[in-house]
Length: 584
Image (cartoon, rainbow, N blue to C red; front, side):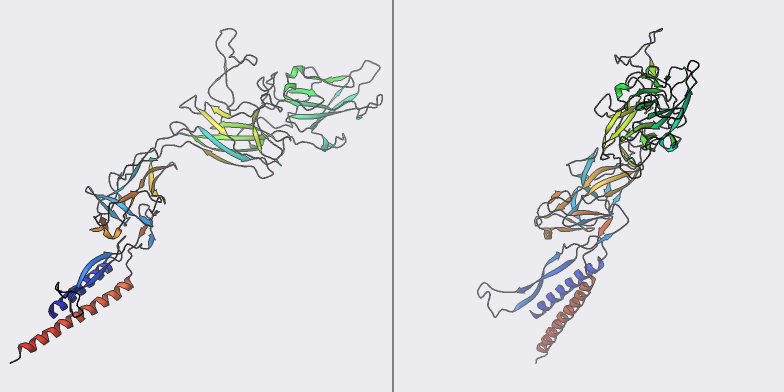
């Protein structure tokens, strides 16, 4: 009996030694879980007398080699396909039709784009279709085909326009003084032609930039005097004149009338203009001073226009023709890049800015637009041929203005002069910019733009992109497989699956740091990372072995000591037996 006891101890110590050695050997194995030996004592008993305190033990047996599924340290790598489970759960593998489970996430892509382990097992997950993750567990695959282009359909443009920027010419707030050039913008002088014997008088008009866009307050002197000595009143009561811009763009769609004459006067009156006041320059009221009338009929004296003082016609290549501008990239249906420019021109002092849009440096829409009758709104026809008439127009209608409130917050975009003919803000859009689709419409959303006393700036975004090749893949903490492409786009390709068990200790080792389910572990509960009891995913990281080398070295000494002690028992039993044999 003593021999059997010693042999059982030697065998148990050898198993202890082998288990410890296996732990040490796999201390650098990714996802490895250390094992421990669980011993049990042996007793030989009969039915009668079982449990007697006089029973002598028969040695030791190895009841179980149990694995410890505590988490190992997470080590970060430079490989986006390296994965670690932070928390509970196992990666799900398909090994030749058998489902296995592992904590080792050192995955690779095979030649068909499937995510696999080093020994070729397929990693299981939920593949996505058009970015929507499915619900069927299958081999996780990375499609390697290029991503198709997407035409831009919407531009989001949020900007701040510096409230301290000046109109051109700048508004003059100072009180008029004919002797102070700082109080007016420019002048014109004409002589009266009275009948003899009266002598001619020099009439001078002084134009001082007013608050309204393109509007000037007009003052007058006669022979240098503001006051008529006969009446004791000013030669000219409060008078304003509004001019068209340098492009002569005032049109019937803006407010009625119409002209194509740069800087032509489109209003004169005693107050700053309203939309309904604007009209054809030939029909504006003249400015009468001392019997001399300044009008715009081609006969002198005509109202002097601000050609040399007002801002020049808009030119995207000349930054002196606008207050602030910038450009960005948009894409047509074939993924070709185009440059959209957006420019703002300060209009007066009433929180108004004219907006211009260019595409590839061009102001005008290359697609001819129908010429509409200003009254009926129907397309006009050629009076000779009867053919429909078309014209080239800017991408945005002339006199498209962006309006802000007194707190600097955007109200909206309008067309014309305030108060606007159409009182509600318009949705800005342009057509004809896409050479692949002449009818493609591009919406422009101005968001929560502002007009504060800060440097002008903008943020731009758009929803189009060029074609792109697959550049790389990575996983987020929810296990989403995300592809990145050379066109700076990303796409969700799928989601990795995790499995858990009611009794992880019941899993059966299958080699290559994987396990299979058994009756003791129960069936796998498969789900998605970050849900229920499943842990999250650490991309670009691996879970290290949970082996503690210090503990294992101590256990190694322990196993050696136990082995030697049991060998001593065997040696002693042998000596006693030999003594008995030698008895005479």
